[in-house]
Length: 269
Image (cartoon, rainbow, N blue to C red; front, side):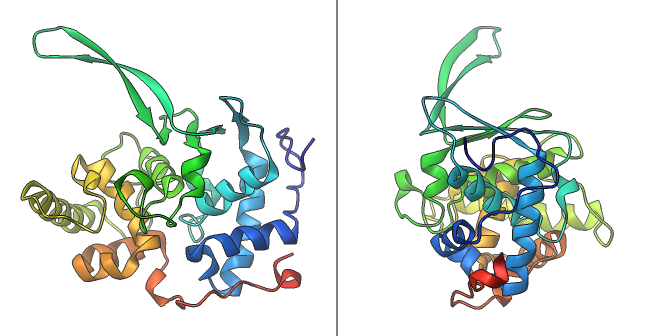
């Protein structure tokens, strides 16, 4: 049995320092956090692990590495928002690779078209979050359309959907905390969305995944990925949106050093 054998241990189990350091070192966007931020992230990840239930499918064997890797990446967006931002769901299902979801689409004539959707991740409203372990490990490490890219992070993407779902439908408007209002969000967010759609529709090859142009909810999720992994790109192309995301997440990824600042094992334990 592993350290995290998901029966909601109380108090939350401490993530071993060596495992935590390996996790931080593997991902530049986590290694770039300040020592204090890394400590805060570790505490939040431990609380997250105690509150969620992990299961696997497709023959994947659950391990501490899988759970801690997902927790560390998934808790980055809520580093300053707190665990309550992920309220209302408990399940995380991890497959070894992309998984297939059966879909049914009704066209305008009432005809049902059934097809299989191959996914790297999916978030269900009020239900579990599903991830491909292979894609979790690809976060920000590969280039090319088929292998993600510098701004690719399926964990942040799907967890952003969960933030979006906290106040209802997936519409690109998460539950806004004090200091943010929906009118301001709509003005800045929709202007950036419309411009990005114009660029994609015009055939421009964008640095940020063009999938963001599919709908408002995907725009929020994709740009949340980019906000944490490619902050300079978001700030350069959409400075008002970058500032808005800074206010929402209460973080400024651009302010973090480009050099890794991994805490010493004694500081992170």
